[in-house]
Image (tube, rainbow, N blue to C red; front, side, top):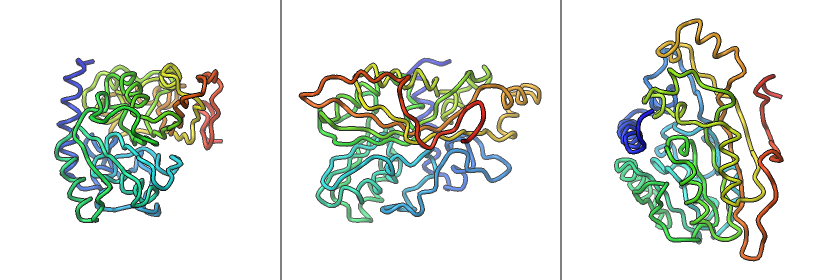
Length: 295
């Protein structure tokens, strides 16, 4: 796999391209990044269209969940969206915070930030702000956010542990996050894992589910929960670019799996002790068994 900065550059270039694509192209590819399938697939994204605060122009079809649905955002909250794209989750969050709250979107792709700012100006949302910057080095002060959300972004960052540390830094004591992301159960074939395009497409950058949850625990977060989990299937015509028919069949029939999860966790308050909850104790809601399929 390529070096950290090289991977970041690949992702930045790819998502600059995505910003100029139609939503239909993004939705029919792997997190919007790979060439479109010859069939119409919504591989990862969930449907926002009935979500209050949804703005169609800000939805590029890049997500893998609905983190704002589970984020327990209250009126007056300060919310930060990591990898805010054209602003979709920010505008949904703004509906929950109301005009008395504040929403900050962070994205390291300049054209995405520009697109989001234009959308906010059209809507007249003076309490929604977009900043350019890396989410592993956030351009925000310590302890300013009540809630952090993110949708299919951490898997694109090489140093995920650093991002989780930054989340802990910028959350207020007692604050929490709800993040949708891609994780693995079992191993990806090397051809997928080593391809830069698949990294930009959310798959090759994903890590093991247990490792992901352990990183969150290691930062001192408590009350860690999987709020939603769903399996992700890569269409055969995308897999065929990387695997032979036999390899694809083994991959699809083996014990491995790619999953979208939405994870919730809380930062300990000023007077609270760190939780003793371990990732092995995490309770899963609306989940699927990787071995037997959906329950």
